[in-house]
Image 1 (tube, chains in turn cyan, green):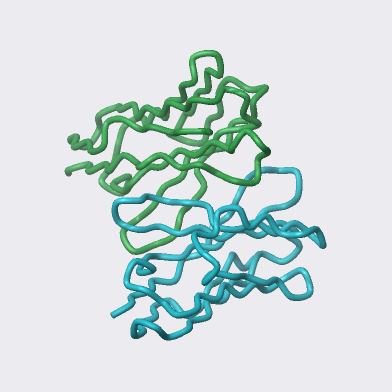
Image 2 (cartoon, chains in turn orange, red; image 1 turned 45 degrees about the horizontal axis):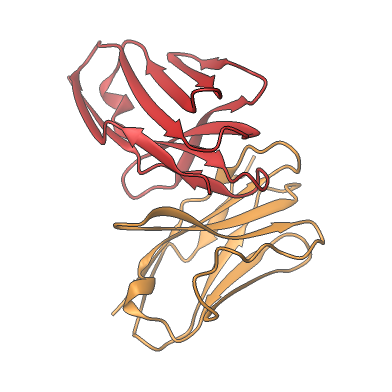
Length: 113
Length: 113
């Protein structure tokens, strides 16, 4: 079956612009996660959605970052007023509730000029 | 706060060698531990997940062990092949639940023909 998909695969934007990154989880997976992978910082957790529960936003680095998940499926990560330090690969993962095994998408490479 | 460390940072071996990658974590109250593989420019592929009640998991030429008391996990790769060349990441959950994975910085493996 289809895995986790993300779009776009690459995004180049100018400093100060807003960007939206999309994630389509594996069908039936109720949990969805966003991570960021940047040079010097490694992989870091951003946000977690589980079903209809309030998301865990504890990893979001600033209030310029937000995410939503519509209909318990597709998720969008929005970065407002992008900064050069936001340049990174943004990875999305999904899992079945209770299993702990996360399946990752290919990522979106964001470059802020 | 969970911290995950991986050694070595890089490893270069000739084809056919058996090798061991090491992972240590600071908080032993974990639900599970996962090993991932990441190819350049790609997302993460889950290799093995070891539940806290297990001591090891095997998949083909890969064997992962978990020793919670010492805060260590190892990934053993038997009869290495050039196709095994990739970065290997281990991840342990934050102690608040298994939702947030904390990643090590990875071991970059190169297997030469």
